[in-house]
Length: 320
Image 1 (cartoon, helix red, strand yellow):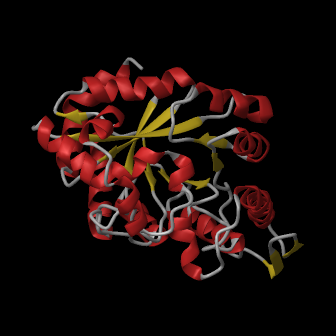
Image 2 (cartoon, one colour; image 1 turned 180 degrees about the vertical axis):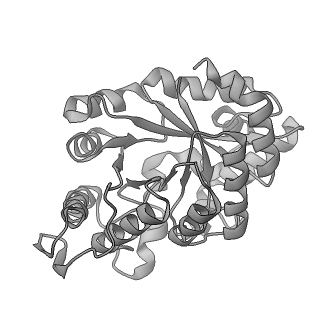
């Protein structure tokens, strides 16, 4: 059976609300949780963008069982990989080993804010390989000095390091990232239910390693209301990854997505009170070869969605 996760989406909820939501998600029986790690929301209508690492620290203390994971952190521009290694080690300790480090090459939206520009995709992949090497070397212990093409580390050591190091996941969208994931990752992360991503990951060395997907849903009693809300909050996703990675600000996402129709988003996101659409969306990931799928509930009905999951949706998904 696939494991079903719950997403703390920093872009649409305040930090305290996200922690409170995770408490409900744990009680409702979700198998794991993930959190987005961005500086900006995709759209100003979403209205939030808390610091993921601080939220995770609070969540680790507020929960007891549910695993935690970044979905995903970019260790290239906004964060130096040595700092990511320190954050991950600290989170593993605070959560008593419940933390996994999901990594990706990021988006211009959140990375340009530190004024270092936005490298092309091929350079980002080069930087990504170096970043993972640095993180793993620091995880191994001892003082680290590293001289790379893109990153330097000088006499760095993690003094608070867990006995069991957090597994590292790598986000993928095409062949190049799948090759990096297969060679460098302990699991693979993707937001599209494409079997070719898992196949390329397996070919590159990922055979037998887990795959983690994610699907947005907009559950609520009124389907029309849910469709309108899904368009308001998630129309940014209609352009696909190549658009999402390159636009610099929420105003740009608003401009490009102004002509996205409600019916376009309803084809992407299950909307309304029924479990069937959510089950079908999860099924696509499972059939593509993913072992775990996180659900993003769009909008404010977070506690109510947890209650729906506990009373009905979990049972409907169990057959997968």
